[in-house]
Amino acid sequence: AVVRRLNPESMQRVATYVQTHLADRIPVASLAKEARLSPSHFNVLFKATMDMTCEQYILRTRLVRAKALIETGTYTVGQVAHMTGFADHSHLTVRFTRFFGASPRSFLPAIRTA
Image (cartoon, rainbow, N blue to C red; front, side):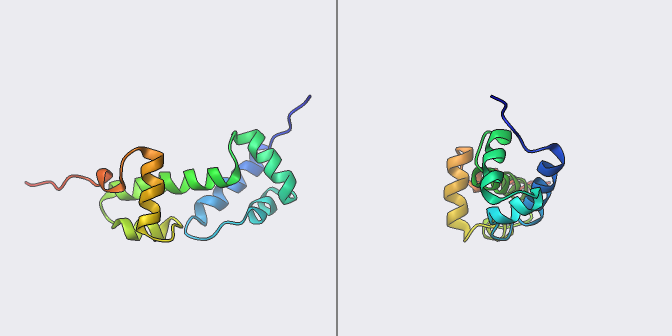
């Protein structure tokens, strides 16, 4: 049996869409449209391509971006939550801790003293 996957161009369009809309709700239908597929067909091909569901991919992408933003030390956890599509800082903290095994605050840069 041949397993069909998303072609690289479609996957790139989907990845770009997710990156540029992280602060927003991202419906699967929007990603399917980027890939020029029906939502049901898109879900099957996405899972075959990425070995995770579309929702898992979006969550992972949000969490990786949140970690990078937190590590800059520029934003509060609440600001990062808003920037990456989480309802609030506590929702981000729960998901972040589950994914990375440590709280967002543990990734804040240490305050440097000269």
